Length: 344
Ligand SMILES: NC(=O)c1ccc[n+]([C@@H]2O[C@H](COP(=O)([O-])OP(=O)(O)OC[C@H]3O[C@@H](n4cnc5c(N)ncnc54)[C@H](O)[C@@H]3O)[C@@H](O)[C@H]2O)c1
Image 1 (cartoon, rainbow, N blue to C red):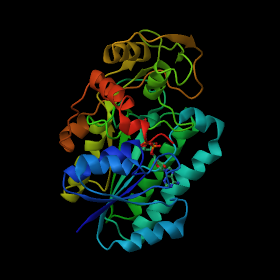
Image 2 (cartoon, rainbow, N blue to C red; image 1 turned 180 degrees about the vertical axis):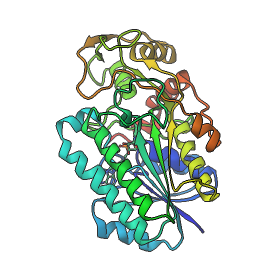
Image 3 (cartoon, rainbow, N blue to C red; image 1 turned 90 degrees about the vertical axis):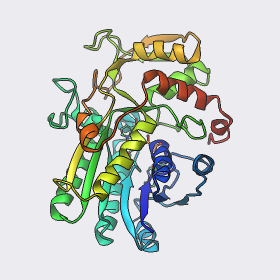
């Protein structure tokens, strides 16, 4: 049977993608050292799908250990590469850690893909590669901008490495998915985003401030060049991001690709400001959230939203959830026993 390897399979997007892959008939194996996740997420995956997934607890920066995983499976038809660090502020404070993990990790994964001739490769890229784009929404053809953080630069370098690799390896097909801002959780609330040190995104910050696990939520700047002055992002439900991977894999497996390295935006195509996000969060929780106004954060772009028409037409992918569903599934997850039992 064909195996799909998923690096970072115990992480937020990886775990939701595994659920979607299994429900579409794929056999999946995870590789994750759990540096930013908890292996108990596999229990949630099993409860949703009825399938127990194996996780190889190894660091992708350890090339011999990574290679040994590939040797265990004789029919690997695809690899989806999520494993990376993802926090913009942490990357500003500890840039070397980010280049070391995200870029060396990718190089090792590609070395194994080459050595084992894995035919299909999908990479977690990010809208951060566009930087502060002059025109919105961004299209895949929008020029790559100045990286506003070391994290964003790891994704730009990652894309370039894969593009060069694809030219040299014409028999291996590659897709780069540029996600906008993933949020929400599986509707069952059996898996979701686990808060990890140094890896906070705006939605977990909102929830934890409301729950008083952390201080009052701070809006990072209301002097951005946006309609209400707060940062604007394109929020996309994590199950929609997950299904984009399944669709991308199915597309690659059909073998009709015009090029062996293609890029797709994965977003809703609508900008939502932080102040609008707070209002939507109030609707989801039925509570009024307190917040303060702070300074702009180094490394943040003011506004970014994308046009995902290419993914919708080429991959036959269609996002199903809106901002209210993103926040209501997040809230349900935070109140669930599944989450409470998995906090590290
Ligand atoms: N969540 C977002 O907002 C977002 C947006 C755009 C792109 N991305 C990208 O998507 C990918 C997945 O993001 P996520 O939100 O699921 O993050 P996450 O932190 O929840 O998951 C990443 C997983 O990779 C694992 N990992 C990290 N370094 C590793 C290593 N050296 N060896 C083995 N495992 C390792 C972690 O333990 C974790 O389980 C990342 O590449 C991230 O940069 C995320």
